Amino acid sequence: MSKKHAIGAVFLWSTVASAFKLSLQYLTPLQLVFYASLTSLLIFGVFYAKDFRLKRENLHSAYLGLINPLVYYVVLFSAYDRLPAQEAQALNYTWPLMLVILYAIVFKKKPKAKTIAGLSLGFLGVLVVVAKGNPTELNFTNPFGIMLGLGSAVIWATYWILNLRDERPLVEKMFWNFFFGFIYVAIVAFVTGALIIPELKALMGAVYIGLFEMGITFLLWYQAVNDDVAFASNLAYVVPFLSLVFISVIVGETIAPSTVVGLIMIVCGIIIGRE
Image (tube, rainbow, N blue to C red; front, side, top):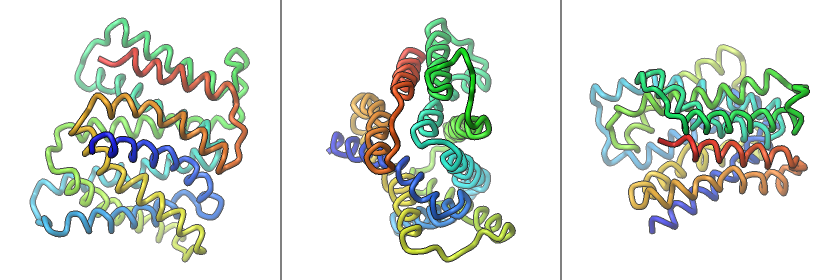
């Protein structure tokens, strides 16, 4: 069953970049976060209901929920709102590179030569993607969107590190993260006047994202990693490339050769830089 869990998670995560882009035609990034995170909260609430209990450790989620879903997804969706989906997903996929850097800084660990080589290759790949294959000209079409895409990777890597010492069960942790996170999202949406009743197709997109980007897919992936970490880890590298297929077919973007080349460089950089 572990292989089925991993394949299912990879397939679902490969579709979400397209769902982001389509949903943002009808909703602002904050509105999309509101309805998607509400969906995830309800999903995790169903799975957590029989084990529900109040305990002091759950207060960790008071700050984790600020990072995810509020800050991370507002930044990520804002990047998708400004950039082609193929570029935004490539930039966001650099989070393992950001993780290596942050890990070295936080834990004062000197990176090895191969780690530095991997980081260099990966970030050169980023340059190829955002410069449309012309890294020497550096003619970026949307610099702020690029900053948001890379920023989302930094935020997710930070969130990952903060979760390292959180030993709560996954469902419990995710429920409380989204519990606090949705409160923050709702407050910001109310204060900024972003609360609306969306049309059905917009709501369906948000629910899909809440189910398969933020919710059920994490449970599938957690099970897959627990059962066969090697298979799941290697299969994860398929996600950005399969995602390009969906972006081309569903969103209708013409995939630039530079995006494919840049992604290959990013993925190779991640593999080379692994400890």
